[in-house]
Length: 233
Image (cartoon, rainbow, N blue to C red; front, side):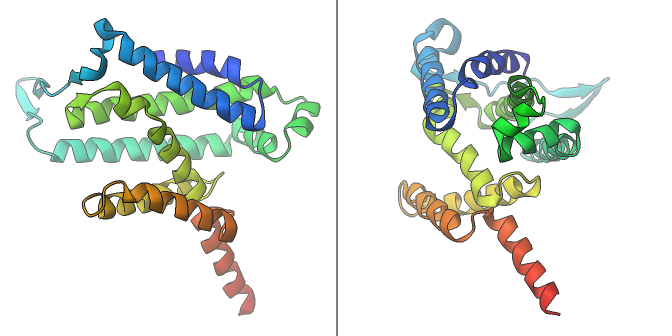
């Protein structure tokens, strides 16, 4: 987590000077550079062959074995705990001064800067928190799967899926990405076994529909319908 935060701050210091499509292109370029570095630094990452991470020692408390990791039950509770922790972090950030600064930057970056909000520092703070949470969950996922390799974790499709969860669920909300993740995972798992790569096509169609029909995501659409029903009463 510490290493991820350091790398994120370095990347943010470079890319946050850019805006719009240039920032997006720079972000994609950085992700691709990291993927290529991971592929070619075989002494550290074992290159395209990847690293096996399946030999976990039993978790003991004193002389009592809590789990030997042969069951999926401990992974479920650990994953659930991490999900709750991540949601709680997002909630705290949104309700804090940092969250209000981020909302102001999202609405109008120039206006936020004119009011004295330190743009680079605020963006890097958000990036560092995001990197820490992502590294925590990514490390857990590596042990759960038992194998990790550069294309699996640094591929552009991974970055796209992370963005899609927020867009589909609702940008700027705490519950939106949770809802978006549920929708994307259900679609992916339902289509992966039937038609190869069909979930990618559905992702694209879903994003187009959301942007055109529900610009605030599923959560914003649901909230808008509830407000209309309440007003009609």
